[in-house]
Length: 252
Ligand code: 76R
Image (cartoon, rainbow, N blue to C red):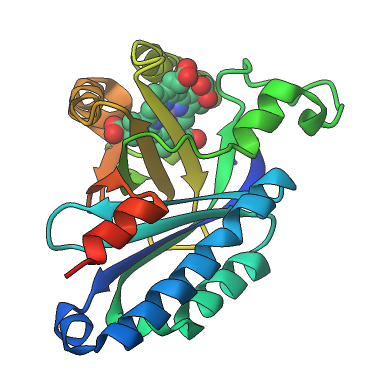
């Protein structure tokens, strides 16, 4: 059998996309809307202490276009914690004015391609602060988010999973070089979703300048890993929502 890349996993991830039901929101009276906003506020207030306790990170972004109106991105210690969050949201009054648009379940993942393919020295990788910070990343609250799921091809002529480790490492090296050209401009979080959701990875990018998403993704299309082996799902792009700008968006 071919050698699988070794992976390290960190926090579980839920990208929870919702749409606003403007018909019911505008039909609600002032008091109903106030209750909904108050419950939304209370729900979001719980995110800070979780982050301070280093048990997860959360962010909310509006989504541009008709695929969804906003996304809540949650990183947590377990699938149970993610499940509890979506259930808690569904129970608040505000949820009655939203519909489910899309969701993605995955886990923060690092692979050993860049580490030279070695399995490490046997020590706990979480003791390495650089590794720990990447496996349990605090979401940067950058102005923009870009999310899309992707696969690596498994076709007879182009099958990523049939390439030997050295070849994959060589290809991933070139992928990493392109990525590094965007250091300081785009932060990427790769989450693995084999066994969890419909694609193999989720790609979440953050940037202050949304144009850098297009530049990075376009440049990668010419790199063999993406050009030959990449298969991409729907793209979601959006703008940071603070509690204040979320309320502003909902104001009639
Ligand atoms: O983790 C590292 O920094 C080491 C190098 C590296 C790995 C192993 C790396 C660097 N990536 C890795 C793994 Mn990546 N990445 C994507 C996409 O749109 C496309 O064409 C592809 C979507 C982007 C935009 C991106 C960005 N990467 C992966 C994997 C797992 C592959 C596997 O295991 O087979 C996927 C699916 C994937 C996809 N990558 C980087 C970036 C950027 C910006 C970097 C540089 C990060 C840095 O050096 O800070």
